[in-house]
Length: 426
Ligand code: GCU
Image (cartoon, rainbow, N blue to C red; front, side, top):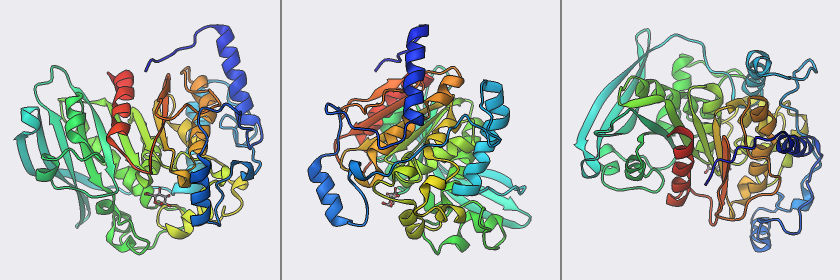
């Protein structure tokens, strides 16, 4: 993969024009006959028969118009980076808080990190493995959640790092040091020259609709039920990734300016929101994140706002559910979530059998975020047609691939992630 920086005036002009067309055109975008990727009709038929109340046909995607990331609430157009940074970005962040992910509490807490286990010289002596506990204290109350870190040994300079949001099985340190789990291949990551840490979502905020009382949100609220616009689980998990970044920032063999956050599916939604809320993350990786992640809500392809807010009411703030069946009235869409991360790097993935997550909607959101990258002086993917299967596309600060196979985070995804990270932070 090559970072391809377009530098001539002409190519910039062409790029801006394409971006303007992509952003302003009403959809569905016509599919070109020679699109390198289209959903396999057999897969479409399978999904349609399994979940017949959801749409998997490109021709049935409603006509929509995306909100313009660079237009402020008062109608004025953002024309320079300073206005973006000082006015529009905070405004957009607030819109996502109040309409989608909720607002984090503004309460003072003391946070300590306690080492609970350690194995020196794991991975044939290449790293140290450390089990940690994050202890949060408010007055005389405490809440804690564990995480694991692997730090390469004997690096000549501080190394970049990858924080992984684990929404599956969380292995204790001893196991993580033994097996290279494809979902979090700590050994591979270390061998590629990165430190890595992982925590489990439910240890921070239980991933159940009735788990509130046991999680960190309830701890912060001292048991009080959340208001409509208060943070929900995705935001709590993203907050936890930031607390791990705080810890890594204090380790002198890690370079805190070069830390990526990676998540799959609900973890991929979390990774994008974590990086929107915390500008210290250098890269956000959204793997198969779908609805409420990278996929445009307005396409209503596969999972919808109505379905996700009914099935997972603890993920999004209450307001999001009011946009069921009226996605086109949302004041934001997910391309603007990616825009909030610019000019830092964003990598989005899809899988060709993962129509529930709307691969085309995930790619379209990435492309539609391009005006923000451009305003901030960064190249990003603007090509309207998706790349072919298993052919990562990287342009400047954004990357994308659609992998053959099911909804999953695989060793192959990680290899492409690390290739991108090598270009961005090495
Ligand atoms: C469900 C949910 C998705 C989510 C996925 C996951 O399928 O509908 O929105 O991404 O779970 O996290 O695995």
